[in-house]
Length: 125
Image (cartoon, rainbow, N blue to C red; front, top):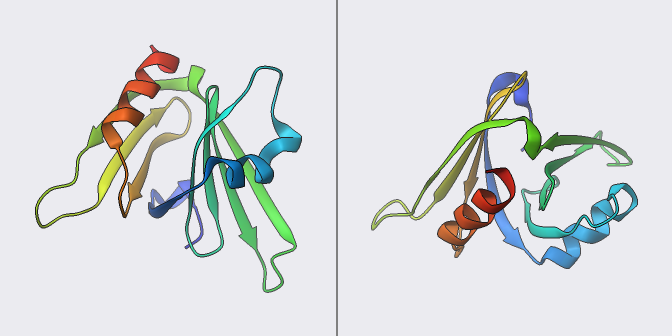
């Protein structure tokens, strides 16, 4: 699934090791910036650092063209998390960025959304 903010898409993401996420964005990290969480779709990835959310859109048939979008936490106006339920096993994160609007991440699989909520609270508030 391509990550497309213009269409307000829901991104179905699977958690991956944060080291894999770090490898994807190491060249763009600032001083004291650390990768906290990383997720993937089939080809695309989302990395959450202590300063921003970075989306990695792999484009084209060969996948050599890549779009990196950086959304700094300083632009977050509000956020919410939704835990998984008995039948709905996905959890969700909604972030409202000024100038961009709502970004929704739907996380599938075993993931502690409450810990992510606490982490975001620490860095955003």
